[in-house]
Image (cartoon, rainbow, N blue to C red):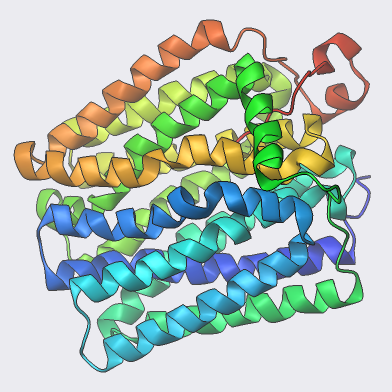
Length: 422
């Protein structure tokens, strides 16, 4: 029987789930709001560009903060800031003053807080559970992210927007505040201690994370591959509202249902992840996911029929969940806690820097060549990446279960540097 994860984990899980719900509401509502103001794919894609801009400016710094400040404190403060911005969003939309520049500005402000929350929440797990529970805890965390952030949130966001445009932003503010209150309550009882308490400068601390990334070939390959995935998939999502409206000829409220199809596939991936890892091994899983992402995007570009498109989006959800659980567990298992925040931030900086670029390129390519070419090009890029990664990932241990990770051949677990996942 599995050892209980404990009240502290479940409390943080609940607070994070509320935060994911807020993010999901915005994922559903912002593109629809943008599409109500303009049908220019370039401008709509810029909404994502500005939201991801926070990673470009503060991604590395947030990793240093995550290792030098108690991580639970970072999480609740970031959510307080996001609750304030979402409240301003509500007022702007309710007053009828929403414009594209206002969307860009408010999205950018939300994006500034995001890397602090993401790096802290991605690094706090070793403080909450033992290493033997990482796979289960990651699966539960990713399931919460999918249910709240990719299924319930976007569906509610689009439906609520149709009923009253300001309502999803108001509910997002409440959800961010709820997450902050729950996490604050946990941190007040036991805030945790900074993982790194030395006197090293910020640059020295960042250098440690960067060196760990560059020296480990599987680590660097996974970061680069995640960057390509984020480039292609973020681009696809940035113009997905136009895919729904123009290629599938469906109403704007269906956009949230498409996102929910992704989430449904991700839930299936959460169920299957442990079994697949045990049967095939970590290295094989990440290679299959890369190829699966590419094929799904090619299908979306070639066959924009409703049934086929929904199936392709669902399969992308499966691959996304299995990828995240596998590489997150891998990263947390081999990374020393004192380095986890910085390694996570450097890894994500390398991989997430592609997100605003992908959204921008998708908008430009869609404007120039059409939606179908955008999806086909993204899929082809991912297939090439999958093939190129095969030799580079040969030195990645192909562990087949959490038990092997703890008690298997010691040579498989050797790591000279931390190896983050996603």
